[in-house]
Amino acid sequence: MRQFISFGFVLMFAVLLAACGGKNSEASLSAESAYVASDGAEQIIPQYAEGFKVKYLEDGVRLVDISDPENERAQTYHFALVPRGTKPAAIPSDYQVVETPVRHVICMTTLQLSNFIALDATPFVTGITSTRHLFNEKMNEQLKNGQTSKIGIEGNFDTEVIIGANPDVIFISPFKRGGYDALTETGLPLVPHLGYKELTPLGQAEWVKFIGMFIGMEKEANVKFEGIARRYNELKEQTAKATDRPMVLSGEIRGGNWYAVGGQSFLAQVFRDAGADYFLKDDTSSGGMNFDFETVYSKAAGAQYWRIMNSFDGTYTYDALKSSDSRYADFKAFKDKGVIYCNMSEVPYYETMPMQPEVLLEDFVAVFHPELVSPDYKPTYYHLLK
Image (cartoon, rainbow, N blue to C red; front, side, top):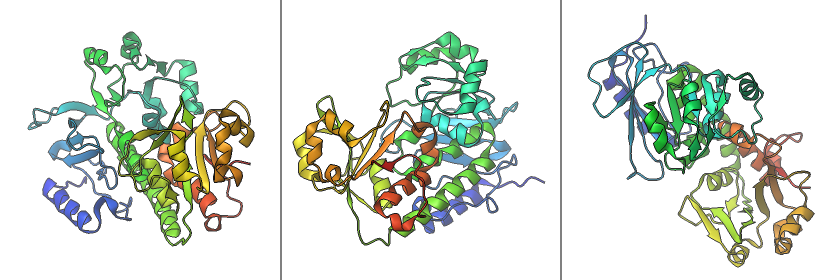
């Protein structure tokens, strides 16, 4: 017999969870203790993600509120997920109804796609945008056999192809440039997926639960995330004991400016959790900023490590780095061979990393504190450049 959990009990559980540390708690919701909604599906209870909230009503209704984790004054989006084929009463008028589980979806970003890949649920995806750096074999096969279509690029979507993909929902990134106005004419639900706005690695990864609600894979999403959070927090606890915290620089000069993200960004959080100090650790912003070379050099000339990610055709070397700007050779991280490198042309960074923050973290731990990982550890995304 399916268990019904009243909203009042859910609220009581949320209060207890907050008392134990809430979203910053190191605990995770285990599959054994997961609560069940009135339709028999496991409940989704975000612990780290700040961008979505879920309220459970009778008749299997889920009220989902989606907001910008970086800006509490930004617009909030409201959706009511209802069991397919039902018309529950008492749904608030400002909630757009979506019947679940959905059968087909369109992903506008690789981060969204990463959630489906992690759940082995790519058959749900009938439309995607760019296929640049697409490594996943199943998705490439779906594109080849016509199961998934290319819908165009941001600002120039092919509406006919989109309609032909027969999606129940389109996942969008409303705060990015994207030309979504034309899509509103299709009448299809445009559901914001704001995982990219989360400021913590576990917050971003937890959006797999969000996707799980739409496709009827709540249990699988809970189990998947539990394993991710457990391993991430194990590594984080180990590095917290390290007494040596090296400084790490990030980025390169592009178009005359050195672009770097702020001290409260996703990347800065990963560095902190890996036992290192980001060169902008005292900065209070989370977004990107542009600097001139002299400013970066004054802050990070003595940094032991330098993180670089780009797409390079061939083998990336210190000579290749220096050839782009001879001044790079003046950094300590260059002189001491402390460059940590990821080549997006060779690894599926954007389509798998959002759902593997524990792997990303261990790559950095292996560089900053090699004594904390296995001697035969093989990096997945970032490695120390030889």
